Image (tube, rainbow, N blue to C red):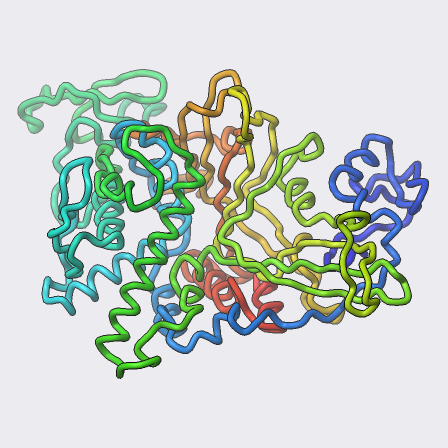
Length: 569
């Protein structure tokens, strides 16, 4: 058993692929089926553990520092009852029906891809923005249901410093604009259309039905026109572009799916405040995602501080706790905790020390040995040796010694973002184009710290389902320019036969349904996963239960509470 994990080595079977072993490592007698497996295992971390497998495993881990525990926050941004209410009131499953594209406003493909990924992976984050907009707007006297799409400012420019947002904030509110963007640009059916007859326009996505050519029934396409002046006329026909051809059909043979693509102008106005982003230039999708989550967190903390000052007495009680960020929406959703263990290799000592680090995403190296995401995660959590000039000061031995260091996931997040490091510094053709396979589901169990050898659920998988993939398209391996697209997971509309899971490629405003095999063959840059519903959970309620289980111990929890949360799924 490898220290701190559930990756086990069985006698007579290859340590890498579990085929029948034919050879062994000359030093530690680790079994392998071939030289290729032995070399790959060496590159994936065995070189840092060879000869050290007999070190005693530490079965008890001290709790993280108090300031890293969410339950230690005295004045949380989202208290547990409020957060659970938000989770229960949000459909956290994959959205239903075809998605809606986003217009490219000028090299904004990186923004469009990330926004699509968040919309399909983190509906609770957008629900928090909507909750802020409605509740803060009511408190500010601007109305509990402010009109959407009413963000102020100059088109493509800075936010008007005197603009008052629907929530009452002067100078603009990112939460309000995120909600307006999602409501007017991403939601396939804007709320103002509910209960009303849909007026079809060029660019709308539709589905064909009740046609004499039965092979066309059920196919989806985009209205290209021309649009007849009188849709009720007997000879009225509407041009629809399908995947392979264009057809002209009667309006009565069309079912409205979603509106045509719109531009996320609300987000463009915030580029100067998101970091070193400039409108019209090509930017990195991963950096944009990080900056967006940081801005959401900063604004929540600022709003929380203002609420405390208004409601509480002066002094310490009216100031947010130093670790209040643990209870903000980004940390509750994407936050996880890593633990680093250093062990003295002196068999008579074998003492360990532990340090903890929080994360919102994991950046994984791509090497000659990483053929899959699981390989990349194994490399990320692989042990390493500390010796020679890089020795470790053992407090028990009171001297610098050789040590074994390993990083593992201590607490798993509700939403997992994996960044495959495809860009390297220096030169022009510095993009890593090596294929890295991934599946529609991921078991994070082998990469989690095993908190106790006596845990009843120690063998249960911790499953995540793939919700979105962000891909960077390039030419000849150049990384300083290219194009971003997103693949997103949706649920089939009611009444649709066949597979209930649908995948779509979103290339800015262009939307096409694609088979899952095409998604899984991409050179992924960002992989966005959501914790799968526990056994017995179904639909939105089951997904919400999984999110609630992860949220209870997600970013930073204590001792056995974190262990239970990490195995709740």
